[in-house]
Structure formats: C-alpha cells, structure tokens
Length: 196
Image 1 (cartoon, rainbow, N blue to C red):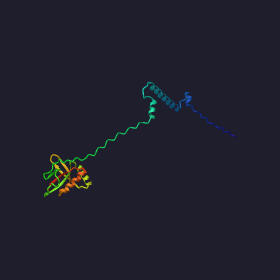
Image 2: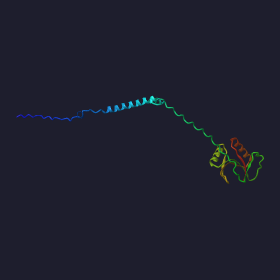
Image 3: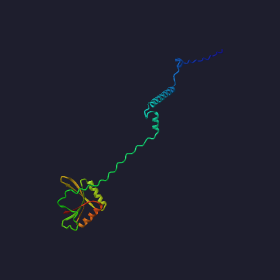
Image 4: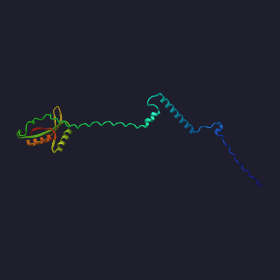
C-alpha cells in the first residue's frame, strides 16, 4: 500500500498593514523636513520684502549680505604714550652740615686756601632721602673713574639722608682737580673743609 503522503502546506496569514486599516498613507520624514525649510525660507523672504518697503536705511537682508562681504575696518592702534624723560636725581645741598664742616665758597680759589693741621677736604656731590638715588649717583661716578662713598646722616626734623661724597683730600690742589672733572661731567659739587 502505497500511502501517499500529502504535503501539508502551511499557509501564512499576513496581518493587514496600517495603510489598509486606516486607508491613509503617512508622509515620509524627508517631506516634512523639506516642507518646514521651504516654509521658513518663505517667511524670511516675506519679512525681507516688508522691511525693504518701509524704506528704513540699512535694513533688510540685502544690506546684511553687503556688510558681510565688505572687509571689516581694522581698528587703529592707540598711540603709544610718550616715554617719560628720565628723572634726574634731585640734589639736596640744603641739609644741615655739622659744626666740624664748612663750605668753601666758589669764589675762593685753592691758592687762597690755607693749609691747616687736622683738616681734610671733601666734595659732596649729592644728598638724598632715598638710598637708591645715592647709589645710582655713586655708580655714575665710578663709571667715570671717581671713587665715592655714601654717608648716612640723620637731620633733625628732616629725617635720614644719604650723602654722596668724594675724598677726603689732604691737598687742596687735588680737591680742585676733582672738582673740575665733576664740572665737565655736569655734576654740581660742594667743596667742604672738614676738621678731623
């Protein structure tokens, strides 16, 4: 007996699609995005048209495009402030000298100075409240081959001063020679007679 086997085919039932149910097909996403962009462009053009009709200067999309295409003017750099001239140290020869020191007037020549015992001669080229100013002058003198020293003194009711001095010299001729060198450098100096 031949049995015939009947092949059974499975029938697959398909679900009805969404289009068949509602009968409407949805818009694709690209169509929605494109429509939104198109609507935006139309609104911009409409606004642009309305702005140009008002006649206000420098308004509208065309003006913005022109401005974007033009090179931007470079701001001018602010002028550099003029350099301040270097401040020259202020010489203060009006400090009170001790009783053992006397100023030799400019009118007195070294030939008129009598040689005395226990007396030396000093050139004072500056007196400063600030030590840095005194040290700057001392360095300037050293650069020109002159050895100076700084003497710190306290002046009553005026404070502390730093005197820049050359010497002591025992010979008035040496004092006069150094004084002439200072004049050629443009540095004023007081000639002092100091009792030892």
